[in-house]
Length: 400
Image 1 (cartoon, rainbow, N blue to C red):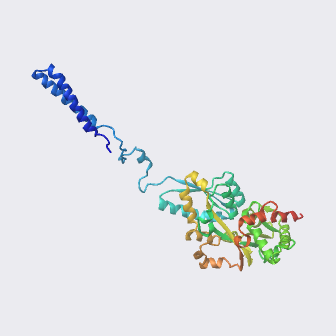
Image 2: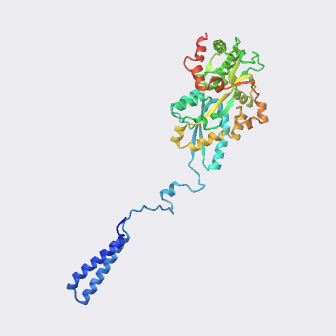
Image 3: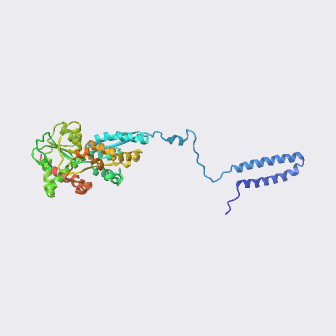
């Protein structure tokens, strides 16, 4: 298939034609020697002009990329030199109230590690409160990059709101569970009410301090732990178990907004005879020098706290890389040790088996789980804490 003559060959033909034309034209006019010289010079100039035009003719080839050698070009301005500091990044962590002390220990370690490895400064905004309240705040516009909530049910609400992609719980170990604990019964010094089991909370005259399951994820775990024990004691009779919970919550003078407020009411303000709260809260209080007496019932419930990256927000903020790195760091031996030191039972088995922690955390004989014994959080939330659920039924039967 012919593609036509090359531009240079076409130009050479044109030169010949022009030369012939001028030669014939001027032959008769300039018959003298000076005329022939003029024609020769003229034709030479024409040949040079046409040849240069052919050599610079436009073709269909693509331009070749060039590498800038001096500053000031776009590439030089936007591409940092190897080893140069990256732009500072800020992460917003939204978590439930009782994790504050743990994160305040862990975050500086991560910041130092990231700075050393990535040459990038990371700062954190932190927000703590009741898990239910924190979840609503994120849905309403609090732009969290990472959420550490008290229960998976709250994280699933963020998924339903389109903030977190489905399958988040499979992106990290232990179905996204990064910390765990068990409910503890905290009593006054000397245990004057002789509280030893969950059933003792039914006793008349025992003032129980706990948070509201409608606003606190911790309180949901507390409620389910008491329910789990009541159900076992009542041979799985739910009607009798509801009556048991009515007796227990009749002894609750006020439901606080979150677990932190419940602890403050009991420990700092002297309200109540008994407090139900996370084991880690008790351990943290003792580490601060407070004298706290408590019981870990043999029939209990594993409190599992999930971690997740808020996909929509990290995409908006450009923080996905560092947010995912932070979440992964929370599973590290270093971070898990920090969780364990201040009261959270480690999810890392190697850390859990360390002597300092086996002595700190007593084994539980009958430990229920939300998935095995309650069919997962979607089922538990609907059955117990939705409008008209068992918690509402218990409250409606209480006569104050």
